[in-house]
Length: 223
Length: 39
Image: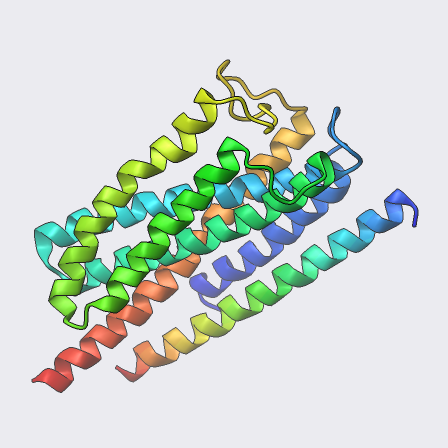
């Protein structure tokens, strides 16, 4: 068994421990209906990974502008795709929590509206990519669009929800800059954040390796 | 259904979802490795 296989199976086991901790180790949160707050152990890491993915998308897009390397374009597209998937997952888990806590899947809360706009912004990135058949033109236009799209991300995720009153609990992100959380809940959340970040980099590396093979094949066929 | 029992069910469903995601990633990893070896 090589090192990569061991690392992959370690993640599998790690996430099973996180799932056990989320349901049986962490206590039920105070001030929430029933066990609904346990979804935070999955919802927050998914939102975090989405933000991380959009940051990677920005870095790869800026790199592409400098290098014009098709692999950097593939890196940017992969990061955006994963960012979009994790944003959708964060929206779904958030809606489930909203249904239990506030009685409706959608409440037009500033955070809900912000993530919906962010989803549209990054969905447009893929619409743009699909609309341009020429590889180089597609890569350079989508790199420029990615830089513009990223500008909206901190504004929508971090600024808007703080300007307006929100239904969201402020135990994790608040103006006091502190984590108001019981220690076992905090440990579980940190474990989950680490696991989801690990999963993101695994998926990202798989897709980039696949793109590398594809690009090498295209280059050989072009010769 | 008692709260403790339903929590076990939700945990089991979450574990099954994770098993699915993990199996998909492992299969993709094997496929990528095969393609890389074929290059």
